[in-house]
Image (cartoon, rainbow, N blue to C red; front, side, top):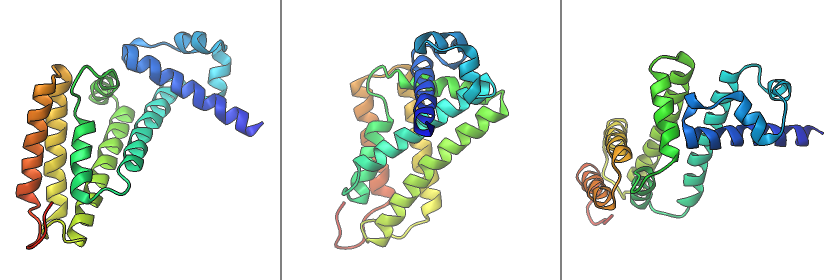
Length: 198
């Protein structure tokens, strides 16, 4: 019974996310979620005490899944390969519906503390992943010794800046230029130790 309850809760969250991606967070209603699932409003609120809590839980689940998928995908890659792969998937090269969700989140975060906290948490999670990858490269002598925290902030700022530009007007040519710029930054900031090559 508990598993069935958890499965339904996950289905509610995933349905909400699909609608957020399609329409944006602010343009989705409880009724649309219930109609998609064939549930009553009271059924939804059995699991979530209010609409904002449902929204936050759905977005958090979506973003955590994206990080988990990336982490699984780069298992076995070297630190430099991980950073390049991160840039490849982080930056949209075509119209990406999921960026509509992120755009909605950033807009809501500007005026709502709960959404701001969630956005900050997501940024921190990605920065931790980047920082751990850089530190691994330093430890393995793939990267030179550096101020890991500063380099993490710099690379994160580049990724977020390019992502914002590309999400407005994505194109493969722009995507390739952005990747080349980021790869160049990685080479300049994390030049390998003597005798090593990235």
